[in-house]
Image (tube, rainbow, N blue to C red; front, side, top):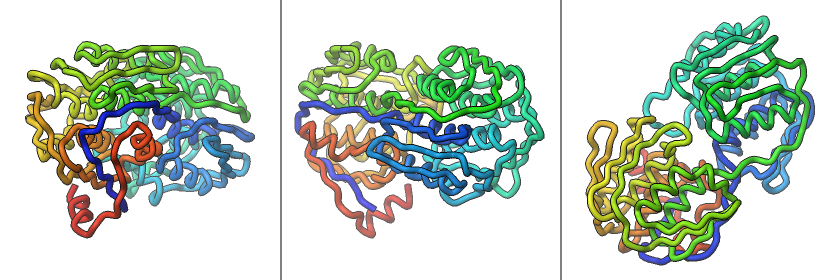
Length: 428
């Protein structure tokens, strides 16, 4: 296992190209199970979560080939093989195999998923949707068992706006008999991306991107080619990073409307951002004003950007308040930022950030994917060298992060973790 070392204080310039959306990719790959012939997904990010999903597809009989960023899946010989543990445990998005396998085979056995430890993130809304479509769902020895003689369209109201549940119900419903309506559906761009793939395969989905999605079941889905959307969380992370130490940084391959809630807040802080159709130019490295942020479901500020934004706020004048309404446990990075001399205190689901505080390099641990991104940004702003252990967490969601940072002028390098580093990481 490697750690990432960052020498802070260097100004950043140049261009970074954003990869395909992780949160789309982890649903698009399981969605290919529903097709009868080859599906090619273009522009996938080179991250460890994708590798795990490809292996899972192969485990159930899929033929998977890759050409650069493009992956082709032939699902013709897939079978409803139980996936109770092993790789399923490594990422939370493996729960999309539930909806996809239920939709194709009318049965599935999937281990309870893993991924970043962000506290309880129940899948009760997923199960509610499956049961409404006619499936029997049981939890036996840490695995979810799904079985249906037949799936029949239904009207489903989500008690909580959930991206995962919205997508999973779509996957199960596209081949159900009759019409399914999902009310209080999530509106994230990744849902539109998955619906676009399914419609290209022959599904009949209307309303993706609104709070009411209507699905008319079809008998068969066929192969297609699909290009994934850019990763708005990676784009947002690099936008925050450019605001912290960038003189002039171009962030290429973005959809600016996906980032409006973030760029509005950064402009409020004093960051200059120029927009075009598919890129942003960020001029940062200047005095920052304090702001308060609150994470909300799309189109609000994403919870996935709360941690990187908190690092930036340590360099804003005055006091800022960060409130996370999505995951209360998403403040594990605060203790690590304090090691770097940040002045932050947590009160319930809010963090109070006092700035402007000079950050100092330290040895810190990435407890999850976005906490890791926050520590990278803090390391770029700090005096001295910051050592981030837990690089594997970061590489679950950031494609070639070391290379991309170096191309912007950051002084970063990788080293193998020592036994002391491993002990620190194990105690994360």
